[in-house]
Every structure is written in structure tokens, then in C-alpha cells.
Length: 137
Image 1 (cartoon, rainbow, N blue to C red):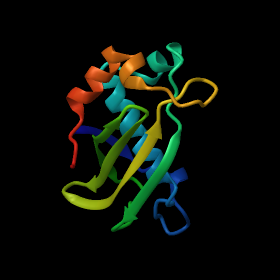
Image 2 (image 1 turned 30 degrees about the horizontal axis):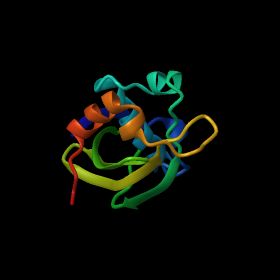
Image 3 (image 1 turned 180 degrees about the vertical axis):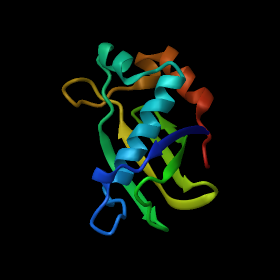
Image 4 (image 1 turned 90 degrees about the horizontal axis):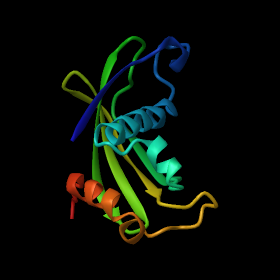
């Protein structure tokens, strides 16, 4: 599991000081991009190789609202790795308190958004991703 910290900014909240729901997906992306960077597969490397990862499915279960100026922890893990897709799961916490949890599934595609077989075409990158996959099945 990978951990990233983010602080809830004023611009991310509504009039009640509560984080707007779409921001959770942005925080998921922050967790995912930092995770990928830390395992030496930054998005910039993927794009140089012509690999793109569009979101094909996402979900968030809101448990308790995130509030202005809270320092949040984003826990991120890879839970599913297929030849043409990858799934990340997330927890967003305030200290030890779970505020939200969810997942994002992304496809592996070329620049024209055609699916690619990551396992066959980029075995070196696949091996790294597979090493970190915490398959829930």
C-alpha cells in the first residue's frame, strides 16, 4: 500500500466548509500518480512510450465529509492487473478515521485509445506492476 498526504484547500470546499464530492476522485488521482512515480513508472514515462491509461470505471463511498484544512491520508493499492486494464483501490483518512473509500479502473491504450496488451508489449513494466499488485481475489 502506498500513502500520500493532501490538505483540503479552501477552493475544494463548499459554503459549509465541506469538500465537494468530485474532489475525492482528484485525490484518488493524486494517490495513483504518486504511487506510480514511487515505483518508477511515472505517467510521463508511460506517455513517452505511447501508453495511456484512461479511466473506464470509478466509484467512491462517502462515509464522513472531509473539511477545510484537514490533512488527509490517501492509501492507494493496486488490486487488479489484467493484460489491458488495472484497478486501484483507495482509502481517504483523517488520522485514523476513514472518510471515504473507492476504486478506479483504467484501461491500457495507445494514443488513439485502442486497447493494448500491456503484458505482451511492455513486459518490463508489467513485471513491476505485477510485483505491487495486492490482488483481492
